Amino acid sequence: MLKYTLRRFIYMIITLWVVITATFFLMKLLPGNPFGENASKLSPENLQILREQYGLDKPVWQQYLKYMGKVVQGDLGVSYQYPTREVVDIIKHNFKASLELGAESLVFAVIIGLLLGIFAALRHNKAGDYTAMLIAIIGISVPSFVVGPLLSYFVGVKWGILPPGLWNGPEHRVLPALALSFGTIAILARMMRASMLDVAGQDYIKTAKSKGIGGNAIVWNHMIRNAILPVVTILGPIAANVVTGTLIVEEIFSVPGLGHQFVQSIVTTDYTMIAGLAIFYAAILIFVMFITDIAYGLVDPRIRLGKGR
Image (tube, rainbow, N blue to C red; front, side, top):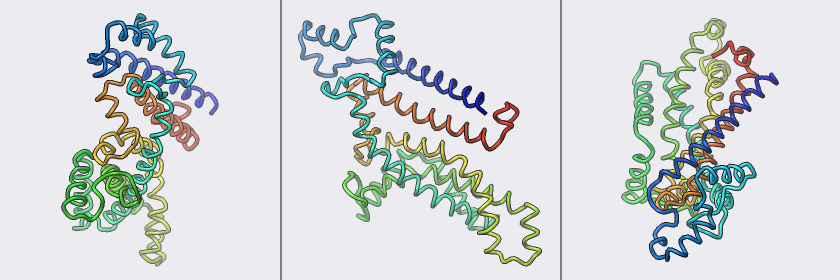
């Protein structure tokens, strides 16, 4: 297990290094000026001073080595858009809203998705099953940047049931959380339905029925309890995807999180902020995948021996 963990840890570090390197050089290919609209108002002398201050006058390979050295120490540089603020400080300040939105959408997704999957399995090949799976297919097919504006317009503006935007209280969080959870609900519903149907065909379920155990007792004590295990194993990666997938939804509902900050950074060509956020998001996903791999290795020894899937 130690060798397996060490190997996965090395893979994680290599993947993170590739992401940081690719992000750095892709930033160099972006069009525009890193100092934004203000660059046109600066004299060539002042612009040169700024380039020297940020190290942009050096060859690219020197900039890369300096940047990697800082990243290793947890320093992602200073924002070009906010010259007095560190990128790390901005991430710390804005991550709270993104984390809260991601957690709330995950709660919505787990509750609604599991109930929808259980309902579909119990109504297998009936109208309820077809309706639930139709909802799931729509959830997978329609992206959150389409669901978000629709919810904001109809539920928020036209019907006036909930606020269409901003982040001021609990009532402002429902629509963005629903928009973000729509796709995850569909995935969990389909997985729970398939897992429930698989469990329903097992011999111990038939044995329980032959002993005269009631339908509800079989469903709650045997089917759901066993069917939910495969679904739980994918919650880690799904949680990471939900937390890091708030880019467009935050912009639609004016949530002051990292997604909103990311979009603003692209608009203003804030190179250090874009690179810092890309690395931060990638680090979360890679770390969660590392933890998931370790958990799989603990559960199934064939995986850590290289004989599993």
